[in-house]
Image 1: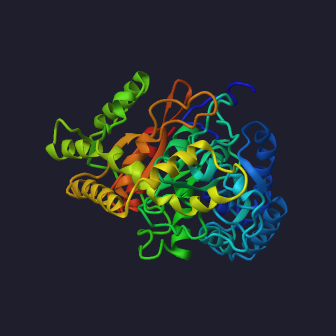
Image 2 (image 1 turned 90 degrees about the vertical axis):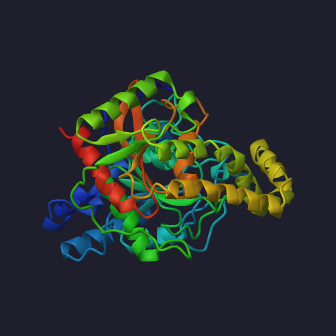
Length: 456
């Protein structure tokens, strides 16, 4: 295995974008088919080393691109994602490719339907290029994917393949999912823009999560605009989860909005965060403050301190909630012939078997108490800033610690990963969090960060 694949510069990351190609599709100077071929060329160059894909369906993607090219010639695109090559995390069903979840339990398993978001993308004219690597059931044994900026390092998990494919410029966008930090961490490691939405805002139908009360579907992309347009198209087409209202906002991002007052969150991860990473984050906060944005910490506001203290309770409930919720379908998998589950999955299952329904109710009550503490701050700030990871991506197979992702996940809150910084020559993501249903407003504030810190 070689070392660094590409030098990383957050001002010039070589990410692939899509929305800015649409005018050329409409005036005939470019086509979705030609755009796809450029993506396929990048896949041919980078995939042998990065190993982001489990399987591809190039013929289907080319047919979709040809149909899209014809629609643009007639000035009749179907949607904002018409002609966009995308990849799908292999926890979600596709009618034309197996869904295997990095587990021998599902080796070769073929669904008869598309997951809800795959259906939305496909009917909107996007081309499904392939399925991307995940960890075992999105929670355990890592896959073979490597970080596109240093092949000796992990891309993170569990949305490892999608994050690496976007970071390597193979595709402009793809789907991911998160229970703890499975969108935010790999996005931070691979230099993606990514939205971990409000809980339930994107329809998870056709997905396989072992922690359904906290998992979310999200989007990775090479630009803030593509990330939002893709997410909004999914939500507008198939809605959110049943009982959830989906994403609020507009189909496209309006002008940037400068935040006036932001809270910085250390979270329980701060003491274990690497010194160099902490220094870069502190300088970043100073730079943000230098642009006239008030930065408030726990020492400045008792309510922020109360939230920081409440966040320390996360380990008291989170792991047991997951263990309880994974009992089914994992019981059935364990009962199958052969050793099909990893020791990590079996250990978590055994933990869940020790919990009663009464225990589970108490655990949910603890999570609700945390969310009430957070809700008390609603309206006090224009967002919350924290890190996406404790340091650069680790060398080797370990996918890194998802602890910074626990915050938005346990709160059911939206969070954007913004690839604004570099840490020892590798991507360093900043999380911008908000209160439930502030996904769009956060994106406009995220645009201000992009324009203020990454503009040439």
